Length: 171
Image 1 (cartoon, rainbow, N blue to C red):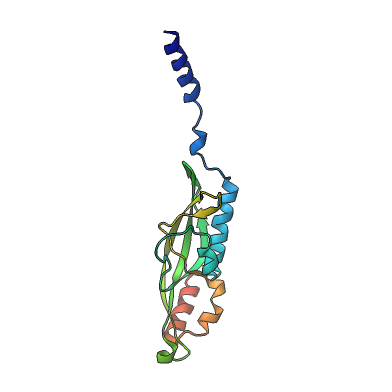
Image 2: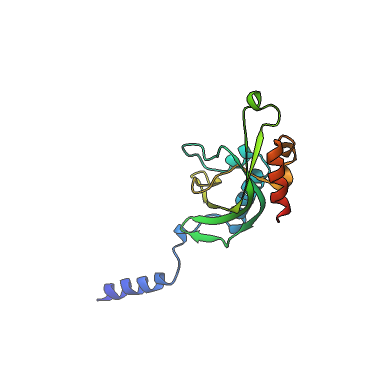
């Protein structure tokens, strides 16, 4: 009987405390730093640097076009087990694609207006060496801020330039 009370007492004492072994081994600030660096590289056109923050995975998560972004907003962070999830909302203006310059000439970029929101869910974890990174998941890089588009806009064809000017003046 004494043993039963001892077990019950131990269970009651442990029941009120969260299981620390399943909590992230890193701070929210550290996770935010990884996510902010990823988005800064992504929207700045430095996609290799953004990719370096993603833990090894199979396949290429990049798209074959660039999502032109006006701004990025963040949802409240969530914590689950050993993961901190940060969700970036990219406010889109449209997309640009390049064509073979040998076939189209130097004006080989095309713009397609398409306002909307692209959601990237970034699950931040620590790998076995303790290095923080982003787990492959429901997100893709190849975003670029409107303010970083000057070199591409110079290479738009006439109809893309008209669509670009309309899209920017609409907001």
